[in-house]
Length: 255
Image (cartoon, rainbow, N blue to C red):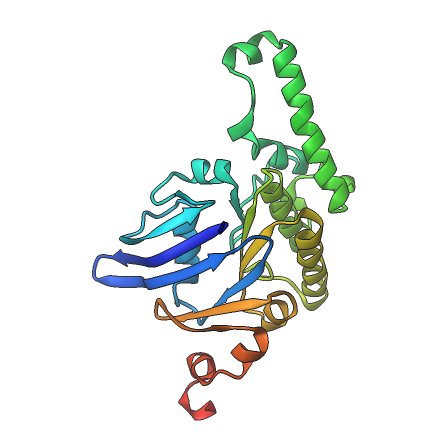
């Protein structure tokens, strides 16, 4: 059974076609890359899959179930989590609270339970805190748990965002340019972290990234799009030597 299967995905905004006839498939526990020049349509694909856009055409199946047009919280509840190119954290809340609030879709109690602070409320709050604390320990973030993200280095903020995505226990993690804004040492740490997450959590990871060192180090399969269309797909070695990819990134004079 495929984890994720996309067929003929097209997204139009007025007269602009941002994504055209895009298809791909995950079998599970894979680490794949989606690359292309700026404006190629990569983030649009992620926005469609995660429920932020409703596709103009095409079919998306997650664990054999259609997810076209589902709201983001429903997509998350099914097992797809994501991060964003521009880090989106609650900067006036503690690191711990940033992770706890991501579990709102699975509270396990209602408003009455909250008011009376009954056993169901206490047990579910404890469960969510245990999940959060375990993630903080696994990602070596416990020492920052009471800090506000805005007071922490950018590399730590990126780890917090990834931890928050992992807290919903996804089967598929979408990483939208996780290396954006990081310095060279942070990038090397990120490569180790993503590789460790893939192995430790046994989840599929789909990654958009402009830094080729990250993609080539981690991904076993890479798909390349340009102007919304797939122009190549294959192993890192095949992509590095593909004339269409070189042309898309560097121009005809480099072929």
